[in-house]
Amino acid sequence: MKELWARMHRFGFKLEVHNMPMPLPRERDKWLMMSLENIGYIDAKDRAILNAVRQHQQVLYDSDVFAADGLSIDPKYLRLRRRKEKWSDWKFGKQHVTASHLRLWREALQQLALNSRRHRSLGKFEYPGHKRWDWRFCPVEDVIYHIDYSSNLIRQVLQCRQR
Image (cartoon, rainbow, N blue to C red):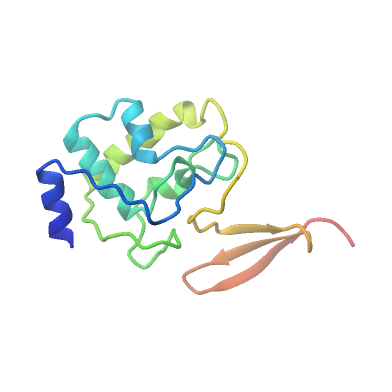
């Protein structure tokens, strides 16, 4: 399968898949690779590197690399995901990523959020995404939980109001 993708890329074929619903999770969300192209990453070699890192980091949308506020970059995406970590509920292919690839990735993400913040928030959540959020708020219980996906441990962190 990997060879098929490599040959398609080499010969300039484009594949469109229409069988998996993938709505953008947030109001002003975009496909990350399109956003990177829009800010100037048009060189084919840079785009191939960024795409490999994107797959390694298990990212698809702008909202995947931003924190819940939709304004600031989630710092975990500025480091390489460890092999055992899963940052997405979806499966992504394995990629070989080097330190120089990570430098380009960090530079690109920092340009998405100049001065560490987007000009405008990504807006409200409209659809459930694939990103695994480490923190959850339960409005019914009024509690904040931390989820450790590597050990499947969920712990209550903070009771928000007195009952």
